[in-house]
Image: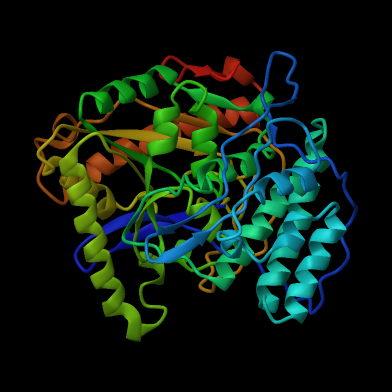
Length: 470
């Protein structure tokens, strides 16, 4: 689950995505709302003209231990080659040599769970054994309850099995990381083995997307971007930001046609993504450039200089990546998630920071290889809406639901064509406005299609909607 917002170094501002923890004020973890079946396959939702859901065998995980970065990553995972109970899949995962058995995670209580009650009982026991902090445990229970309610809304077959399977994996990954925390480098590459964190995140969010009322704008432009990447060019997506699920939503809506783009986007990531135990497993499956958020730069004045130095290192990493070519980078110049208007309650893209857009443009320009900047709009706030106001502290109430979502990209916007004849600061303001106006126009089309229930009929000459998974 992902939250994206702007970040800066001592001399520049760029955007980021970060993840936030969940906690509650409750001193006890209540009982679950219901229990679940013991047969837990990997559930992948696909949408046909009948908008049905299908169970597909997935064999993307294995069990072994390897060193990733500066920590030992321990993973016990499932090979779901056929529809079987979780206990059977666990037994397959446990087929390792005796010499390797000590490398398996100490969370069999989660992986062996046959019901939702088993999962929450394992959480309570971990707290009692002082293996899990209470605030993390409360966040895990809150996440479980909200995810359960949202997926059950979907009406897809075997929703209860998907809930149990996905939440068992989430709890396992959180528990393992609390015991042995993963540390992110300034440039983090998605961890795909021995545990595939990317597919883990995709399968988790997939259950929350109503593909019947989801849309992609200008799929042909996404295909154009793919061709430019193959030629060695760089691509930058300047986007609004709506929810923790943004990266997963982007990938889910284009992966059927453009899996390489879906998997290889690099997200500029805020500091919370590397510290929050509930969010880290999801961010470990994304390619990240880790920075400190501009909005939280001075939360602790004693750490401000350290954060600025860290951001400088991350910007240097970005420059090196761009020099290598064939990179696609996502950035949110708004500096945070969109919020609804306090009076009308209508959602719209938050204004873009002209310094953020200009700094990114200059990095692309000086990379030494061709680069192209595209405006991207995303609408998915219903799935994981942010708090009404920006919060300083890590920890926010998670509300999730099953809903349609949309993304749209417009043709690239060239700085010299739009503002080349102007001087700064007017030039960067005009360029930023051109990008923002395009994002806003695309957002309005997506809004008409999803909330206005116009569907594909909401298309306009500059925004052609489709459902590429059909």
